[in-house]
Length: 240
Length: 339
Picture 1 (cartoon, helix red, strand yellow):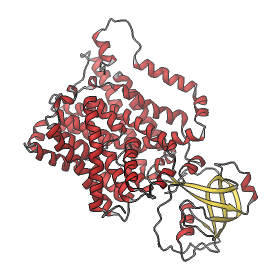
Picture 2 (tube, rainbow over the protein chains, first blue to last red):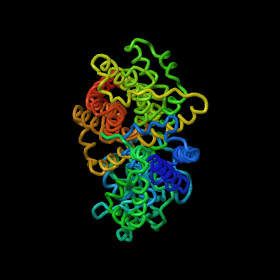
Picture 3 (tube, helix red, strand yellow):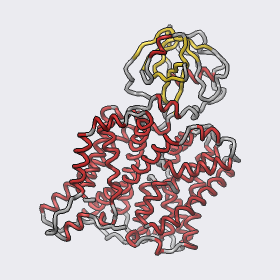
Picture 4 (spheres, chains in turn purple, brown):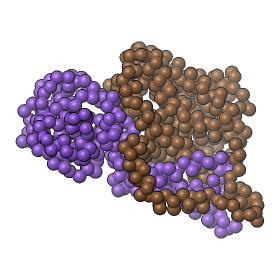
């Protein structure tokens, strides 16, 4: 592969990283704290490609013989470099969405790591308590003090089907989407929920229904729904 | 493998018949992809493909910044660390040099994809192959970034960090000593042993930029390949695998070792994946962490491309076996059993 093509690919790939880091799409793929890394990596890539282009142009203008000092790229069969095309096309043209219902079904066996016997602080006061889905599932499974009992909570997630049941799901990531696992809550008492297509983002409020077997990995605790409304997908689709 | 690039051909025969260059191929691909964008999107609308493409982009976005850091380090070594300094730094006896090389891996943060160019550069600067290969295996596994990531991924399990450090150091040093005893220089392709011309002054900065650029182009391609393979396997390997394996420890260790090879995760990220497989005991997950940075699919491709196939076909399988052994031993010592 020609040097020029390599440099263009580097600039395109760096540009792709910068684009998603700056417009917020990077949250579909990695956790928020990675943003400075993605920006720095993208910028360095654009710089390395850009510097090489400028130096090649200057060298050509001075009509120097080909080959800048330290240029050892002739050693390599640089065919592998064509693969750099793939993420460029994926980011600019396909722009894969955040993980959804399909991934929930695939990763059910990867149960969340829960600290046994952890003590949970009481939920903050208020008529309706906003809560992360992962928080709800953990408290439902491991909270001996019953801090969820009798409280109305609100949660945001997307719709997943499990047979005839409707689940509210959210993916949890620790680093990037490659290590995601799902947390799910079973929704009951709201017939409208059954009509929603999968992957619809909803906000529900309701009360926890204590039941047996809450500690089995991948088990979805039950929520008696009082209100349900569709919401746009949040900019930050994962929990951490 | 033919290594003649088309720019070389172009400059050698300026009046030759015009050939299609890679620039034109690139433009053609871009135009076709732009025209076919809506078709492309509809193809990727299938749930399984959509999940795989998200995982693919995620691995790329997560790992590329680390790779950039790695190639900047390797560029800096090529430009600012003179060969004489390295020769003075390392003991003359090879067996001792292997030990120093393994420990110096601790000081250099780099991802395994970048450690291949660094090791090759060290070899070019006159470092003994055994020491350079030890460094190749040690640097991606025992540097502070990886160890901190491991500690973050396994809160409350400090033994895991120690075991990973010990297992990976042992793997790299054993491989270095094995190379002194049985390794043959002619297995390594001639181009990998060539010495870079010494540079000074302003040239150093251009060497730095050019080395980093060339390494990034090379390693980037293999990183993408690794991300593609791992995204495909993430969709193809059923999740129940991990649950079933928790009972059979030997099978669990072997499968995790194979998974480490095929998933080809960057060493800065693999601890988080290992942590998420919480259905498994700690020992198989430790083996996963020791094997992954030492040898995986993209590393094998990268070694074959850099040092030649004759080298990679001998070095990679031995590394795999040694890494499993060292991982299990380190686990028994530092984790106190299977757990």
